[in-house]
Image (cartoon, rainbow, N blue to C red; front, side, top):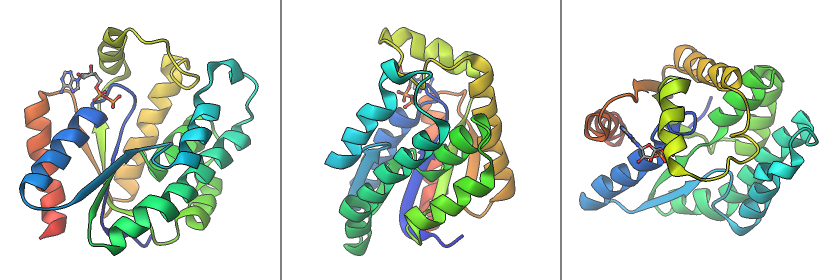
Length: 210
Ligand code: ADP
């Protein structure tokens, strides 16, 4: 898989701490003089945010087909690549994504059972060479992540309404990615203090910037 320099991604199930770590990482890199562009998937551009609304709408539970879901994620991604990611990378900026193509691999390929081949073919078409040089998977048990998100008090979206065994398959999908693609995917223990996790994450990213 061809990857784009200075393009990083954080992955993991909800409540694994992606957003927390992404904000800390962006602040640490900006303090060192880098310009950082960050966004969350699906989203990051106007069209992609509209597609996000469709994807997360709880009223489509049991209605949206697995393939429609797969294609919508890729459509949102194609747009944010063209509008945000590629221009930022061309300008020498660092791009950090809160979720990207490995989410599709883990959720649609692994947990929904569409299989890695279909996801990979589509990912190649959607991303081309615009693929993160390093993705860090925040690994945590479903139970621990749920304990964190339940404190948020928000109504769960369509994906969040899935049962624990679905998220267990997602977790296994992420771990398989880290095992099979060690050059561009690293899994780290996310069941630690935010400071400890950040230290390891920052070291992994800086090793790629050196
Ligand atoms: P995600 O973006 O993966 O869903 P968040 O960063 O939003 O995860 O974190 C989910 C919740 O867990 C938030 O309430 C956050 O404050 C809390 N949290 C994040 N990191 C940690 C950590 N290392 N230890 C304990 N709680 C955490």
